[in-house]
Length: 85
Image (tube, rainbow, N blue to C red):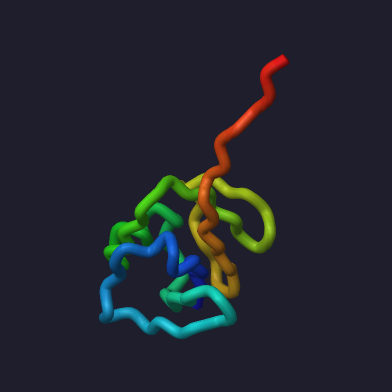
């Protein structure tokens, strides 16, 4: 089983057919392992209102990373910025 954690402020819609629970300030969607982060966003019909970065087990990961049993994915908003001199 894989847990995908999503900040509810980013979530527009998710398929109610998947097990969803509240974990602190985040929604947790529990899905079987074996697909990529991107595939899960598609198959769970998760619609986000802004671009996100995937963090798998505490490390940033590409959206094509295949998830293994026990993985935890957190979707966090991309941060834009920089410095001008």
